[in-house]
Length: 120
Image (cartoon, rainbow, N blue to C red; front, side):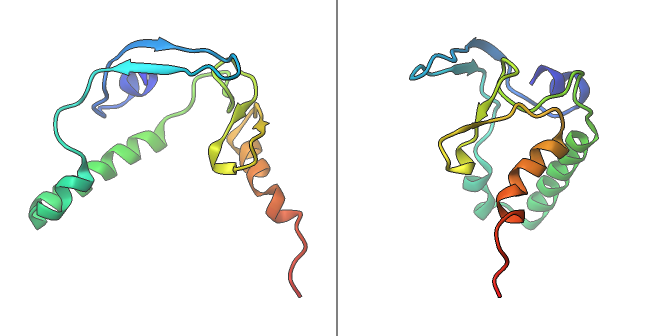
């Protein structure tokens, strides 16, 4: 978050404290400030078309800024300790990585599909 805050104009909460524990069964947590406002999903239905257009434009700007960022060296995808990580989206209950690049991570994600037989 510090990297994004330093290199973009995207408003972010301030991290106040972090507890990082890789011991199995232990939980890690972050305490941070809260940004003003309400959740977009709650506000959207009652917003005017003009307000929706402004919000969409602002989000587009934020995503453009994020896409322009280059990760600090050395880049990796994995746990905070540069080791393997658990990705709940994979639903395999196993750790994976670390990966040296986004491409290597993407190769890992598509490997099960790429290696499965094609239906006839």
